[in-house]
Length: 359
Image (cartoon, rainbow, N blue to C red; front, side, top):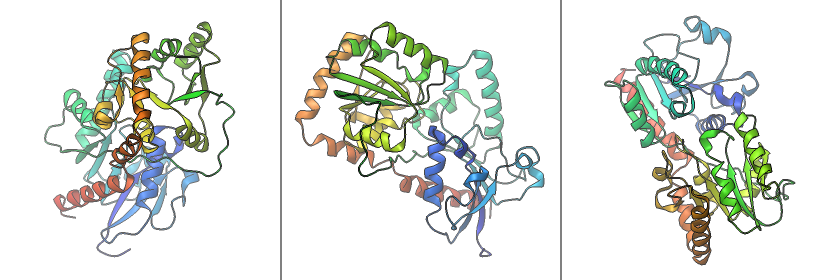
């Protein structure tokens, strides 16, 4: 390692949950930062054991360990430490090491009981107190952070995540995808995603429309949602296949008529941007960061009255497919959110922190 290079630890422990949003963020950020070597920095990635060497030889690796979690002062020191999410259990060896923290969202404030949310907030406040700087993935999240946490003079930077969907050749139709006009939604099947509003909506659409809601369905909410689907007699029109492969996700974005995103809580929200990357129309809620990220390139439901939702959808879907320029417009907007741009912003921030710390 060159004598002038600064050692930077990137905490990518969330690779252990690769099928989650944070797992994907860790994977894509790790891949982007590992594409080359840098004159100024030498990066070490903190990863689960099976990911050691995963990103090639331009970076070093430290494997997640109980020693790092509980006895960090016994572990290797770094010049700068960056953790990509607020729930990490890992910290620098030295309390004076510059510590950059990303806060993705404060969704737990709307998901947890008051008592549990308070505990989560207190734990996060301790990390904010330790942080040299904070990054957030939307202006909406910045507002939530300033509202619910004591930030003081700690600088907050808005850096949007990159969005990338892996592309494949010759992917066959998934078994879970029926014939008909397919509508697609993807994300962990939890209360915050607000999927229940799509059931009445589907009742008011022509029967040739079929809806795929893909994502982890281990939560009790998913079980209840399936019960509602069955009770309403919609089991031949609404399907919950669970977690789907990247190949099948690619196929769905390619072949769906539209992407539906009625979520209430999003730090940024990837599916609308992913859909736009494929030139597909997005129908979304007006909550949290969704309008900030999608801007005027999505169709927004003003309320969740089923008949009104359906009427709005049927009107706008016709308008969309009558204008052949719209898919390219959506794709162009989605290109604002790339991992190249994300990494460029972080490299500039690492440099800024290093200069302020006289490194």
